[in-house]
Length: 275
Image (tube, rainbow, N blue to C red; front, side, top):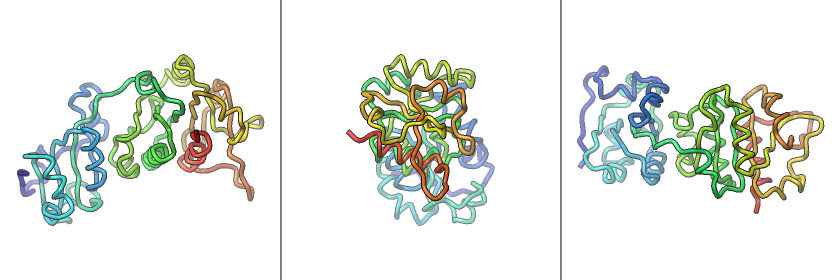
């Protein structure tokens, strides 16, 4: 049975993950075993539980205890459930809860890029993408369209930040992912060398005059291909494009020069992950 606790003190230390800890504090790089993330909405929380993530506590409106969250709580034993009216929870968190349910969960142990790519044929590589909505949308497309793994440069947004997890609809738990490199200076040189050592041909999605069309048969013929996507606004750094084996562009019409990075990723995944 869940341990239901009425929220009476918004400053209670057990509520800190929902109210006062920054994303960096939740992630706890100094002690990854103590790291947390926040999953939002019953569907996303269920996906995290299915993937083996361990719940620490819940925060939800009262009506969800025997409603939308009932099946989740049955799975989680005596995990504390902090509850209050919607207005109180919004005051606590600073935002209106999506479908009224949050869950603080232990972060999974970090994985090595080489391990998750051992059997991969198509991977997405994200360079310095900092918008959590875009990261979440890229993961959702990667899961749907056959990407085997997602690798992130050291400066990318954390895929387990609350908004990225929610926008992904929980697919961050379905697609293996890892950071490629420990610090910003590892990118692009050391990181791309690691990809090449794994046997990947690197394809930079970039607006260069010599770029291949995304439907070029040479790309489809590569047994292992890493699709490299750049940050919002400026796209990939010139040094990254120069370091990749291919530059690739998506043909455009009506004078449009590019797509949002999440949309471009979806098009590239659809075309280049077909078996």
